[in-house]
Amino acid sequence: MSAAQRVRRRGGMRLLALGAGAAVRRRRAAPVAAVSGVLLGAAAAGVAARVRRDVAAAPPGRGPAAAVAGGVALLAAAVPGAVLRRPRTAGPIEPQARSAQGRKQPASPAAQTRAWVELLRVSALFTVPGDALAGAAAAGLRPNRGTALAIGSSLCLYEAGMALNDFADRDVDAVERPHRPLPSGRITPRAALAAAAALTAASLGLAAAAGRRPLALATALAGAVWAYDLKLKNTPAGPAAMAAARTLDLLLGAAATQARAGRGAAPPAGTSSSALRHLQGGDGWADGPLAAAVLLGVHTYAVTVVSRREVEGGSTAVPLVGLAVTTAVAATLRRGNDPHPQPDPHPRADGAPPPGGPRLAFTPGDLLAGAYAATAVRPYLHAALNPSPQLTQRAVGGGIRAMIPLQSALAARAGAPGSAAALLALVPVARRLARKVSPT
Image (cartoon, rainbow, N blue to C red; front, side, top):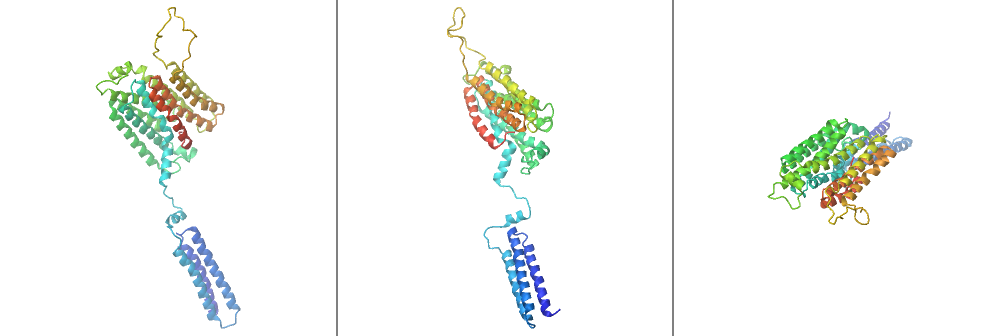
């Protein structure tokens, strides 16, 4: 092999090696830059090959010309490598390099916030304050600082239950709901469990600030929430545990309100006789907070039973049970709206009804009872007619949203129109948020 041929062969090998080496050295660069290096190196090798063919066709004695051509080709291949080593584009390229290597990018603050909003079911939070307000109204008292403490305690414990629920169901959700924050990896199980523990501690601290009796009820409520999420959810006792949690939550609001009202020198004006018995230590809950708590617990029991079929659907009987329970609760609210009717100021001597026949008077409590029934009945009816997973899930959402008009009706029934109106104002807000973040 002549010296000119050896020079040409070495030049071609070096061209190919340099073109490939440029791409390998820039493996941390953006994919487009790496591909450009390979293409430019290949183009330079093609140019060198063409020069070699021209030199081979030339007369003998042109070896130096071949060497010069190889050097020019090497220079042409080195220029793209230099450009790749020192990119002229403005802006950092390190995030792109990490993405090119397949490393996991840290989530943005907005994405992290969205993940926690989904985990904690923020759209369902509006169903919580009504428990304490309805409990205060059923106790015959106006909301006070104890009511606010009870609302804060309930909110913390409700969110703790949501985080704990997804922590316990993370394996099931990986199959049935892989988009949820834990199975999708947006939130770690350890973070969810830590959030549940911290929120539970905050809930007990707020209840302790209201008094001993509220702390005892909050402790029992926390036990019901943790037992439901970790043990009882998939057992026949699951719906009963959830109903007990809502019942205890309303009683917590009544107890916290009474504890704060009892610390004053005199009860507030307008305090009912049953509330006075509560403040004096009497046992008059059977005709006030306990009755309201039982109605709320019965509704919660029905919603929980329906929610156990929201993934697979296929059951007509379960939505019908929810429909029957809702109708019964609404009828009970309607009958109890005027527990102590005032006597007729001008009764007739013969006891006959007033002229014009009986009057059909609809109180605000009646209208709120109808709003409660309308919110829950229609989704239940649709799910009973077509028990698909989508309609069953809508029935569960309707049952959750119906808790707000139910709490409002309970407050109106107890003679607290202000609390009833404030709760009713939360309905459109909860419905709007439910369209963005599912409450189930």
